[in-house]
Image 1: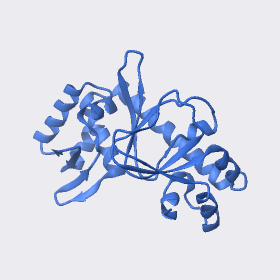
Image 2: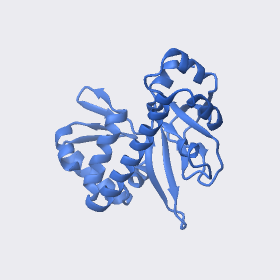
Image 3: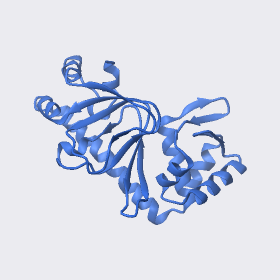
Image 4: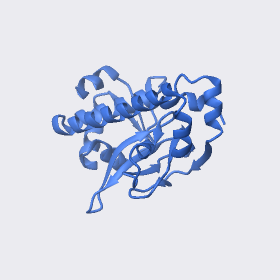
Length: 225
């Protein structure tokens, strides 16, 4: 296993070689193909996961069958850590949106490992605080921002986490379908597609298959506020 994969995760940032090596002994690799669920809402679970490569979507389903996409997670991010503090059924469904490699860690093993490593415990609290902050921002956006503003903000967030330099801008390989992107911003597919088409017509972005090239980041940032 690559020790740097673990060190790149927020939870384990700044660990020395001894602490990281001790943790790696508990971890097991796991692979998911696109469209494969890691776990479903309501499942019992006693493991958390670190994403090594690829992306996963985190969603919930309403009583009438509609899906809401809460977030997209990628390399270095953690899934399933809430059950460490609040054991119970999974609160969301997590599905791979691309070929994904993960490292799994049982909560019992993590708890044992954390007892002698207070800095790692603080890192875990920071990771949870970041997740809560993102949730609060999402709720605020749904209340105060229009759909084009939410689309612009989502593209910028995806760019900051997954963006790669391109000859004419920044390539954002989000790996989401149009429907999934619409779920992420809490709007209809038609409304989101209209916003994306408008951004493209203005020369701010270029649409590609499951990706976007941001051509004018400044204008997109202005529209996000």
